[in-house]
Image 1: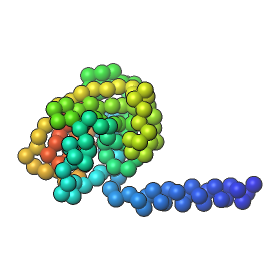
Image 2: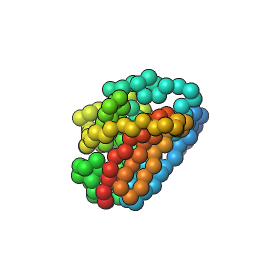
Image 3: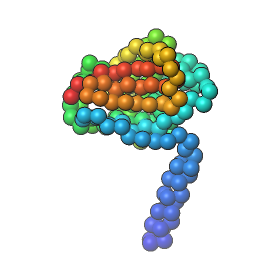
Image 4: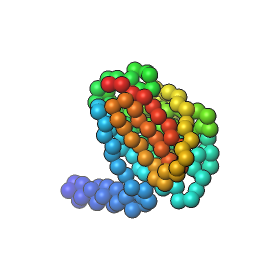
Length: 162
């Protein structure tokens, strides 16, 4: 029994180190008032991002590697809709003229490969804004009233209230 447990622990550490080694993008957690987001930060690296690398109309993990997770410490509104305190997976569907921002109940996903729309808790839309400058590294910022997603020359804002 002890050898089986030891083998299981070794395999778990081996798998976690394989995933960590495969990561190219750094990972971070940003915190605002009553909300935090944990995500991978891919780089542009000269690529065309939205409409190419991240296709319009297709669900995106909103970062790199593991799907992005957002935690609300208390009930509030997200994009004008009621949201309960808790942790959700944050997906987006980029569009040229409109983005869909999705909060999904299935946690600990790798990418959007197992995304299931039946587990969506909330969907809101937002208009993308063209930036004059290029944002090389995908960045999420939070303040007391909004979450902003920026990458390449695109910025998307979702309003929040807690």
